[in-house]
Length: 633
Image (cartoon, rainbow, N blue to C red):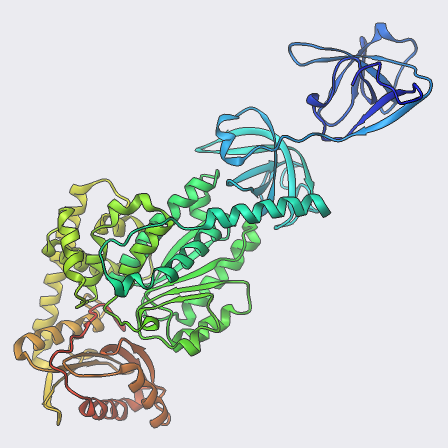
C-alpha cells in the first residue's frame, strides 16, 4: 500500500483500518483514515486502529485540530523504536478501502516462548471468573487452555456480552503469572457466523485427537481384564475430553483400600494431564476433587453436598458443572436416588466398579459403566486393577509408579484371581515383598478410618507411594499405621470373640453371629464391617469348612461367607419384598455385603436372612472376597 496506489481511473486509495489492525497492516507511503486522539504543543496524535497510533508534527500542517477530528494522513516513517510519523494530505477524488487485520493466530502451547509479545488467539470460552480486579476468561484452543485477563474497572465485568461456550478472538500481551502464563487482553471479539463455525470445526477436530487415550499394554497378561480395555479406553477418552473442555471432575470412591487404589492413580494421571494442557497453575485445584464415601454406594447426604458445592463453584467461579466419576461404587440400585437428583442438572456420570451391578436401574442415568459382571466376570477383578490401567491410558508416564498398586488392591479386597500371582510378582520386581503389600493395604484402611470424610491426599499418597518422592517416609509410615491397625484389631477381637454365637445350619455350614453394637468397641478402629470380617477370617482358619458370619447392630447387618453360594443382592431384594415394613436395603458382592433395616424389625429380618443362608448350596472351592473394608459404620 503506497501513495501511488489508485483505482482504474486514477483515484487515490485511502485505507480504513479495522480496529484490530496492527503495524503489520500498514506501510510507508500509504494513505490512511485517521482520528485525532490527543493535541500537544508540537502536533497531534492520531489513531488508525486500536493499536496503530502516531504523531502528526505541527510543522506538517497549518491551522488546528481537535480531539475527535477525522482526517486523511500519509505514513511517512516507521522508526526503529516503533513510533510512527504521519503527515496530513488533502486528496481530491479518492476511493476508501476497508482493511481487515490479517491475523496470525498463535497456539496456546507455544506462548511460553512469547512472553511480552502481543498475540492473537482464537478459541472457546470455557470459564469466566470475575475477580475483585479483572474479568478472567479461560480460553481453550486446539492446544491448551489459558486465562485471559480483561479489565474494565475494579470488580466490574468486562465484555458482559460474552458467555461460556462463545467462540472469541483475543488480542493481548503474554505475561508470566506465578508458575503459569496469562494474556493481558487488549481486544476481545465474539465471533459469529462463518468465522465462528470455522473455529468450532478446528476445535472439534483437535479435541477428538487430543482426547484419544494413549495405547498401552496391560501390566500383566489377563484376558478377563483386557477384554474390558475398550470400555476403559472410552472412559479415558471422556475424562481427557472433560479436562480439555475445562469441566471439573469430581471423584467419589469407596473409602477402603481398593477404592483408594482406584482413585489415587486416576487422580495422579488427570492432574498430570491438566498440568500439560492448562496454563493456569490453579487449574488442578479447580478441575479435580477426590472425595471418599463411607458406604459402598452414593448416599443422598453425599450427593446433596456435592451438588451444592458444584452450584456454588458455578456461581462464584464461572465453572461448568462437573463430571461425576464413581470408583468402586455406583453400580447398584441404591445409587439411583442420588443419580435421580443429579439428573436435574448437566452432570455426566461415569462408573467404574466391581460390585454386583443393577444395570437396568443404573444405566439410564450414567454415560459410561465399566464393571466386570457386564463381561461375564466377577469381583475378583478389583476396581483398583481396572483403574491402574485407566490411569495409564490417561497418562502413560506414571506407569513406573503404579506397578505395585494392582497387587495392593487385590490383597485389600482378598481377590482370589489367578492373576494375583502375576500382580504380586510384578510388585516384588519393584521391591515390594508380599508382606509389605499387605501392610500397605492395612495402613490404607487404618488411615481411611480416621480420615472419615476427608480425602487425606498427602498421607494417602505417602502410604500408597504414588506421586511422592520420599521412600523412607513411605516405609516408616506404613510400618507405623499397619502396626497400629494390627494392635487395634487384636484389642477389638479380645473383647468381642467371647460374644460370638455359633450354630450349625442344615446345610452343615457354620454360622457365627455377633452383636457388634453391644459387644465390640464403638467409634474406634476397626469399625463394625472390619470387625465382622476379622472374626470371619479367624473362624474360616479355625474350621477349614464353609463359614457364614453376621455382624449386626440395631439397624444393620454385615455379611461374610466362604464356601457357601450366596447371592446377597438377590437375598436383599427378596427380603425387601417378603418382610412388610422391614425397610430392607443394601447389597455388595455375591458373598459379602451389608444390609439396612428398620430397628423394630431386626429379629424378623435376621431370622429370614438366616433361613435363606441355610438354603444356599455349599461349594468347598468357592472363595469369598471377604472385603474387610466394606463397612457399615
